[in-house]
Image (cartoon, rainbow, N blue to C red):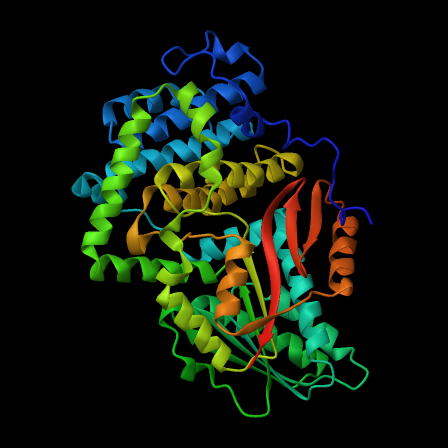
Length: 467
């Protein structure tokens, strides 16, 4: 089926500057920009921008603010938030690097950001635009709902806990599917968790209206809190309910609390880690960028030990608490990328990951689209800034790959449930229906990877309570 199989043909991603830069020797050097850069091809300009972006990050990691400033100035002449993919990427990655530098002057940084306002309504709107412009969330919802329907077959009382409750479309679709069951719909209760009451109020309004229209017995239980502060008593899980848990792009945020706990309890370990990072940065500064690309770029894809399973008691405790609820099913969607480790490791991995997301939008959405620009700035741009500019408890975007989540969940006592062919089939039909060219699905050990051409960007895995 089109869109369901791994595409081995050529793609705009595999031939993009982001994919080419690690295989090329650097020419010219970091100190000699291309002449008449505006007149060269987009590919050559893209490679030049990548070289400068990597060089600039290298200077920031080494604490060389003067050299970083020179790079930022050079890049600024060619980066643009409304240009081609590489120009847009350059705009947001340089903004993130500049923000990290400014954090060295807390008073200046705070003054420059003191009047920034981001209304909740605009944040919701931007996430909805992402839902509309890219199929990843649609695919996640289709796959998750199919798994829930199969797990809850024949159940009379169903309780779903939504760990990131902001998009009613997923549960509207489930209500419609449940209303068509031959044995009739179950009594359905959804507990939605979100830190903004306004978001949950909108969810409750739309879902209650849909349930009433379909004549399905339904309750919505709103829980206003951050996920790391969740009190399990507020979930009101009852005996006799068949429980399902849905987590979409949310679990990784709990890792920040583990980082803060370690910092408070092990200052010596933190100092040792910082020292090794500084020594590595100094070593990197003494090389040319060409030598660094040739010798170190492969090593940047190795997972760092900073997020090892043994050092995540908060995450382990949270997953164990969910296991204690005895869920019949838990479906988890996470970004398929490793945005942990040293600054340079996070930086290069983020270049590839977000470069693919920018490519997705470039392939289908006009460059002048306001919706596209807002998604790139307020969603992708803020995540990039968080990954690169923030540390400690402030760094929430701690994405990890599927293999790490499998280990975490198995340690917590969960057993993996293979996602069914029906879910894969429905996801493939969705890609066909809306003509989403370039998006593919890959099955891996009973889980699904949602890809842009040959690059996995999100993973979906299903789990059950296991004694």
